[in-house]
Image (cartoon, rainbow, N blue to C red; front, side, top):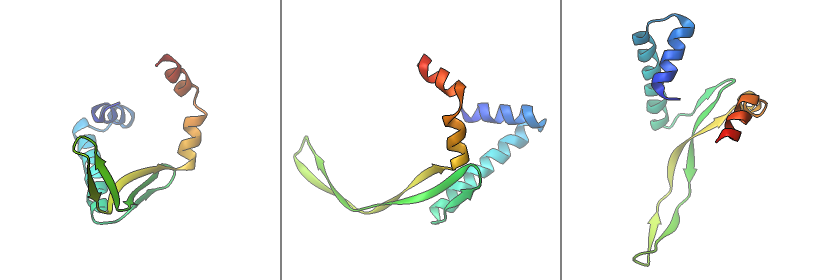
Length: 102
């Protein structure tokens, strides 16, 4: 499912114009990106959490040159789904059918 599919489905379910839905979805993504880049985590009850995870400093290897690279500690965005969300996916028959087809 793409962002356009999500916008179309929200527009159909709510009856709101696609342009307004697009603006809302884009604004949501913008708020998430801006707040996470400022170091804030975002918690949406019943859906999940967008959190910044800290990665430790480590040494990686470039196999072709046989050299070591130091990767400094850094933060990466991560999503942790809520328990309600996880349980809904685990109990879904449609997910199981879709997985069997693939």
